[in-house]
Length: 230
Image (cartoon, rainbow, N blue to C red):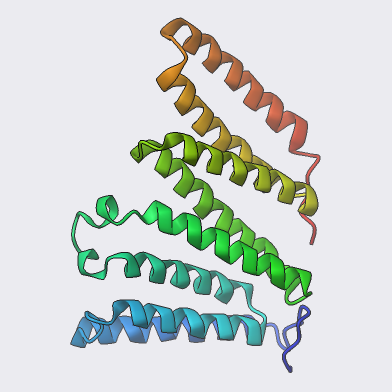
């Protein structure tokens, strides 16, 4: 079938599996060449970017959400590798590369592109997948920044901004998943600040009891209200 900005029905029941198999075979060949000849050691970032572009083109051409997830993962890997390719195999890669900052910019930029494509009615059924990936990356990155950086207030604001967006998107798509993201990450960030700077041992006990009760109420109150649109 020709390319379309709308959702395309597969021409055969096995069509999506063949497309996915071809993409997985592409990765397998790359992995074999790297293992056998080590020719990607100095071009790991470039190779990952080429893989991401190939997956994005395949996902849009053949309307395949599974391949889209591979493309997003490959693109995220490229930005992570580009931070410090020489330290990819060293134990200092995570601690010294500031990947949480890369994650914040990457997720914000990608979700902006996804919302722009959604506004232009280009593969609108892809928007949920984009926002799902980007929300997790952004919230985890903001939370990580709070834990390892002295500028915790800035990251707390970013965390709350991400949670607010998740709540907004949850109401638009009627998705309980994004509301759960906002609650869980907001709770972790708030608890971290309260425990470190405000709550004493006695108050902490009552806070934990109250917050557990609040979480139970949250699940009961909203789990049947939200339903993802097909």
